[in-house]
Image 1 (cartoon, rainbow, N blue to C red):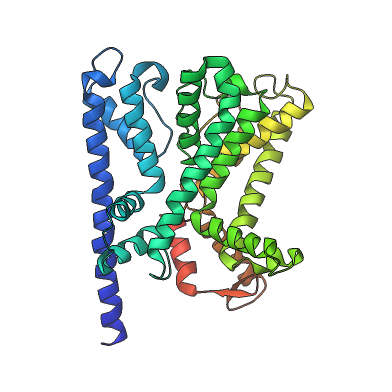
Image 2: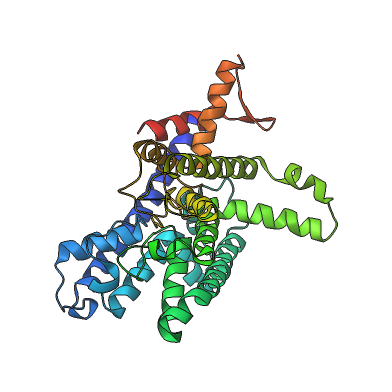
Length: 372
């Protein structure tokens, strides 16, 4: 089989798996829409299909846009459906389907492994089962930790039952970068002076946005440091190139967004102007973190100054990182284009990042994704 035939076969396989993934998302959206149309899903007992369809779509696609107030329009049943759709959309159809197969002790066929590879954009099919287990386990641990931290703020305010429910909902929504909450009509604005709520939300958003591949690389390196297999001073050097680029871009975007928000909103009485210095920095940081793709708000978004809005659009366009729960063109895509531009400016023929050459096909794909 020549190279052309191999490429054609690979393309056909990718198209088949992509179609299955798309159909899976479509089925999830339609199922969610039907459930949200049921009388038991709304407080009034009525819900038009268009509203239910939009809500199901925004939940699965974790965009955070809503056309009705989530906290008052939907019943507990409706909110549970929305939360399930958010978790499904954040982790992905393939990941959750694979997890169900693991619970049923079903073996992964070659076709299933190829689908997981395509869904997560992995370079190899080795260790697929272990990867899925780690994704689910890591997600549960992080979301549970976030929920517990939220409880310290929500239980004293709302009571045990409501406090736990709000904590679980917010933890999953924040980790999945969905931005949907059920606390009230003003997102997290009532917690603008609460470091616990804002920092917990930021932690969950960043964890979801970093991507699972970065998680395990960081965990593995730190485990080796703890076991004294490698010295602590070599931590950064031991990260793979993918992790280095993601961490660098994430830090740069959060820092730049925070600085811009602080500078242009510092004297704006409708956003940060009336806060103390510490609260201004906290809310500027949270604004930078959440606008990447999460969609929560601790300050009024409609009152932001134009420079802040402009920079926010750029940061939202980039979004999160590959194999994570966030959206956007991805930090890796943006970083690849930056390194490509630097290569041209410096007169190099190859695009290089941290002394590693980035393949031309990856540069072209990044350009295509950004332009499209």
